[in-house]
Image (cartoon, rainbow, N blue to C red; front, top):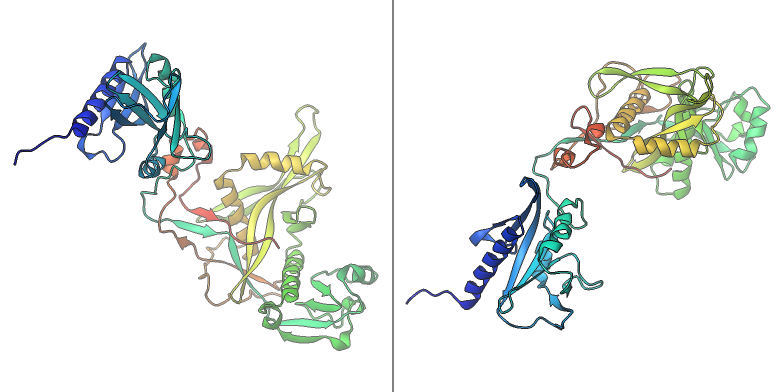
Length: 456
């Protein structure tokens, strides 16, 4: 039996050859894919017509050839073309813009359209304008403009490298074995505060909700007896409050953890109620503050309180910026975690809240990069975990809770969790080639930071 070439095969090859010749006539280069093409016949690389230099800018091309049949709904002005579903699905995955070139052999007409330029509501239907969509010299500028698009919707390139380490922005919380519960004559902490201030007691690491008093510290024999009935106070297992599904107990625990942290780290951190964030205290008015800590490996330091002078008015402070973080508390299983979301707090002089804090924060956030956010996380992780320059031991995420550190002021313990191994790596090197801000976004090392947690 003799071998044959069908008319469709011959016309397809002829169409691709004619399109290649047309592109060459217009001054550019068409590279065909040959026998292995599966929906894209080739690519057009654009050439500077003045210098002859190749631009490296490319679009993908699929050629559809017919002999003499009219197109769907064809008139003197235009026509429609319905693409096959499998072609549309394949083209949408392409990392290059894909254009469809239609050739009719009977009148040697060439029309083109980007496959994404479909009719609204119908991703398969293209509408061609015979005056606008001819493949001729006037069309080349518009066609070449497609090649500079980046980051289009629907384009996905899978990572090519194997896994990398990523740090969760979580710290495990260790709590005392017992918690103190009692009855209060006051319905809420707001009602109780004035009575507490009438005494010499100035501790606020307690919660009163629905006349129930809860604290990690024994209130008996202290000024807190002004807000709690000491005869009703008793110590219970912390798990009875911290490890239940009762919504009220969960709210109490979140607020108690936040207040206890506020008291425990009062020498270094203050609470900004409007921003709901802990921030580094200033040592004195208009004075910067530097803090030494250990990052991933080496000791380093950061200016955690920074004074900014007014550029127009000499010797006038414009604002004071404080390193800060928004705390979020999350219970996973029976273990509580603190999620750290780095941010900044702005003051007038180191103490008084700034009038335009929101605007200053928005401007600072626009300049933030992964490296600075990650550095802030490690800074606060170091502070909460004990503040020593010795290497910190990381614990397994779901292992036993870490032991509490010694000392009467360390009511809560905080322990870093182990970095996780990702199945794939984020292709930052590939992105950096196209991103003009890549140099500013580079970080020391390839370990990233994953943010998790919920609002407290």
